[in-house]
Amino acid sequence: MSEAVETKVEEEIDLTGANEVIDKYIDMPGSLMPVLQGIQEFYGYIPEETVHLTAERLNVYSSQIYGVLTFYAQFHMEPRGKYIIRICMGTACHVKGAGRISDTIEDRLGIGHAETTDDLKFTVEHVACIGACGMAPVIMVNDGTYGSLTVQKTDEVIDKYKKMD
Ligand code: FES
Image (cartoon, rainbow, N blue to C red; front, side):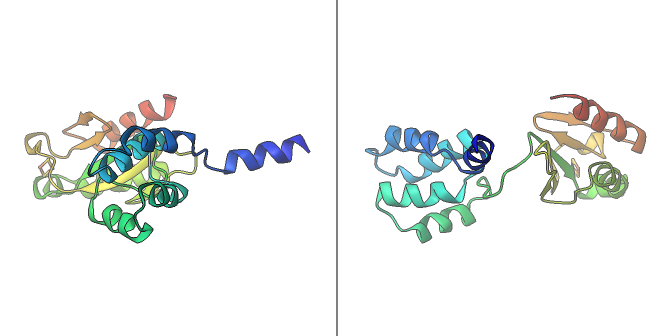
């Protein structure tokens, strides 16, 4: 009985964090953007339940919020990994073998572009030039940049993050 209750609680989104974010900005003009940014910072993405809560509390339509979420690439509606791996697919990286690097990462993690591992550890994204062409091919893992990659070096980078919490 208590196990079932615990499982149910885990599956539900606790809206306390979202309510606290809304409380902070509710009286500000133009509060929608800071509220959505705050919610994403708290949960790591924008859970659907928080869209409805925000709509109700800020007195806007949910459809307006979905419009904002769709327009701004910074917002994500699905949970994302702790480590975001951005694989540069720009011209310089492409010429220097970004395809091999991408295949290696996707084989190792079992996920492709815009996908997240089931354990929420990794998200893979293909991106345009990240401005480090001199080090092509390049990937970023969160704020860290890894350049002049070979398949072996890529394996080492992935291993390093796999071992981290
Ligand atoms: S093309 Fe990859 S960093 Fe510029």
